[in-house]
Length: 178
Image 1: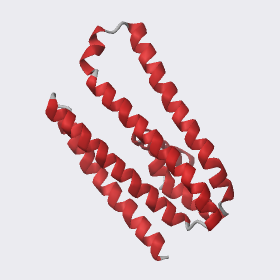
Image 2: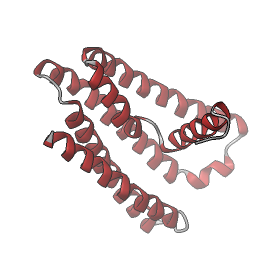
Image 3: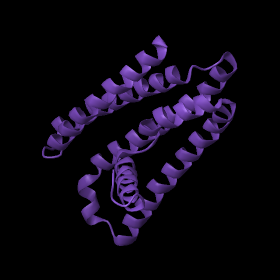
């Protein structure tokens, strides 16, 4: 029970600080040069710390057995590897930001295709690592995985869109009453 509470508090603390990071990132968009790159490095480190806290919270909330602990390791590695690849892609994008003006439409489409393909490959690795772990969970653990893992596994923009859809679809299905 205490592990679950500590994990939930860690996730809450991470969520609260994410808003502060978003505000800092918006401010840094207005600046350029070495100061922006330094802020980007700090932001990447902060994101890594947030991810580690979210993973710890999910793991604590699942209350894994010894056999499930073995299945957690590849899942955690896949999530961390995907996050690292995403950060590297973002840093590369920031470094080549001004060069996009000189790209042809086909080059832009190729860059977008490469980026989406890499993201898809990383997501596939997470799914492949998560499947054995998820299959080993009991119903209560599966519920906790879905609840606690949602914020960690779904990108911020997609999460907001899903919340909006659930909110508005719920209004229409329920006759407008909430």
